Image 1 (tube, one colour):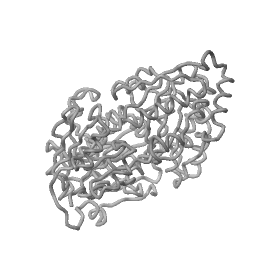
Image 2 (cartoon, helix red, strand yellow):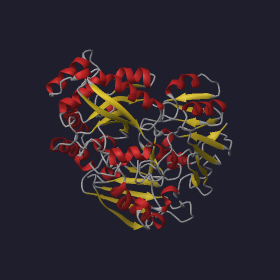
Image 3 (cartoon, helix red, strand yellow):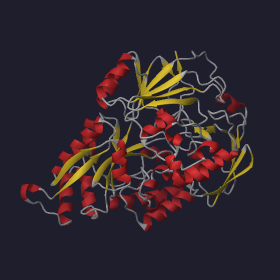
Length: 527
């Protein structure tokens, strides 16, 4: 999109915001399975995967996006980007109410961006870094003032990524310990009703939603079912209607898809681009030696993980940037760790690092912390345990609940290696930089630089790519970045994950955005 492009509230936008013309059956309850249970319902301070699956139905953003990843009107009905890229002006809708009945104004956007997302959101710290001020000349006009152009910013304004909060509620008290962290209030199509810990979150229809005639559903119930076989049974019996983002056991996907009552889709991750990875604690010996980290990269069998853990639903990662960015010219392939002699190479690197095999063939012993997102991660941990044993590394496995794992990984840094998955999202600035930029080493902030590796050279490359508006120049910067990151190997990039979503056929229009389950379900309806 040209920076001077003005997106007006024209007939096309009005059509996009209105209810579909074909007959719909209003009412009903859609049951969504989310696994694991979220640690909180505060998407503005945590990007833990399960949170947004709930709260994207509660909070709206300034914009939403089509499957072409182009922005569409939401709370902002029009927007203008100045030719120099340093001013972004949004015109807000005048008919939006928060769930407590108070109107949305420009002051809410200013507060959300400057006081919440820019300071506390794990990705917002980077996304809004160039925003120096948010002006509010009137109640429906918002002007972002930028120190430098930020071409990626227009892609980061969805209700999932940058939820707009009511200032009169969240502006009181400590945002990190706010009483509404688990009782969210937004302007979205569904209102929070209750959270029964260990069981479900109930969201009811917002009768005053600004998109007239929507939502169709009376209620969305998000269930938390720890046992994988029980999740599968709930879908088979029609007790649950939609599950994605790893909630469906991968070994059950093909069988579920064969049932006449269910359908499987891989749509809805185009703006997510999940990467399975392993974070290495580069401050802990012997992992402070890049040769040891490179050896781990070679030892991990990516093809085995794809075929036997994720049942073919993925492709080997070739570095920190997803191949989903190839059409935009931003993908660059790094080292190929799937070579036939990868185990021999790993052994050679460990020998060169001065770590010979001792009695029993063991070089050293570590603990691998398994990310607590389901059974496939435990299977992956067991596979890694066997693969590292081949190169003389004895691995003990540890599996904790989500809050403990998050604290261990991102606050205490009390780990050697941990599995993880990180979203590349809609632009590398938003989803990739946080993994190894020095200013994302932030104890207590989750899903940022957990390895604590960085370098002045890679920081400079990312800083240049952040403000570069020429796509060809950005491509060169990212190619050099991938090369340097792969040489340092602070993270094992295992595979690009292709999430399947299971949907009961009695419901339509469930996955309507490139964010999939992170969509708001406003148009979801029963047949």
